[in-house]
Image (cartoon, rainbow, N blue to C red):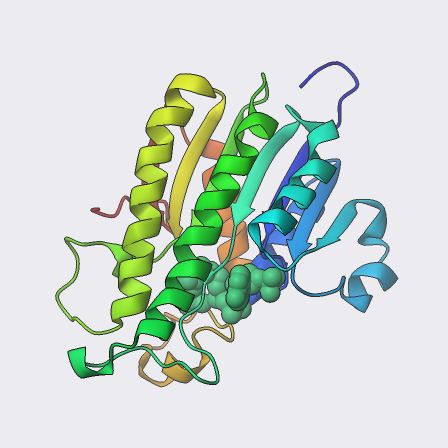
Length: 249
Ligand SMILES: NC(=O)c1ccc[n+]([C@@H]2O[C@H](COP(=O)([O-])OP(=O)(O)OC[C@H]3O[C@@H](n4cnc5c(N)ncnc54)[C@H](OP(=O)(O)O)[C@@H]3O)[C@@H](O)[C@H]2O)c1
């Protein structure tokens, strides 16, 4: 960060359950001057009414690559001043798409759409942010992944598109970390598993979650903030859960 430059944070996918909680965690962090929030949705009224608008810069987009380029043009004047980036995109189910229980459920359109939201869009962000994050400010980039994306941890099966897209996201992060480590040394990447959290994404699957294991988004956002504050800047990517514990790739 240069003298007089503001300490900025960025939340990509800021309208989701976790994205919104992470946004508020960053807004409430006194060391952060400004939070850029990127979403398909409009800025929520309560954010405007709550007075956080002065700190939050809301950017609406539809996530085509050209639209994402336009977002990064708005961020470019603040290059080198970002200390926190959270990539929160993730789709598990929609009105027309359910996680697969068996091979016969695999469907070309569903696979493509889940891969697009969960791996392609985060990958394009990592590319576009490359020049914007480069600088002297230590910057932690956390992409919301999932334990089910761990190849070595897969004993249950099912959820082909979601699992495979998160494994692809993890590989994109692993590969990007090598390049960031060489060319943008002030960045640390994290593949973050939030644990089962009470959001729209987990709603249809919450019945089987053991008591005490369904987290609130604000709890997970606080845990992530602690991890980002304490993680070692080692030029690699770490796959960490909500408790800061490593997960096997
Ligand atoms: N909740 C859990 O139990 C749980 C567990 C493990 C991992 N995760 C991961 O945590 C992350 C956040 O999930 P959540 O629980 O907050 O889910 P959510 O409330 O359903 O939020 C969905 C997120 O994905 C984005 N999104 C949705 N459809 C999209 C599309 N077509 N293209 C691009 N972005 C899209 C949304 O961004 P907009 O702001 O643009 O709408 C929002 O950030 C995901 O990566 C998820 O896989 C969640």
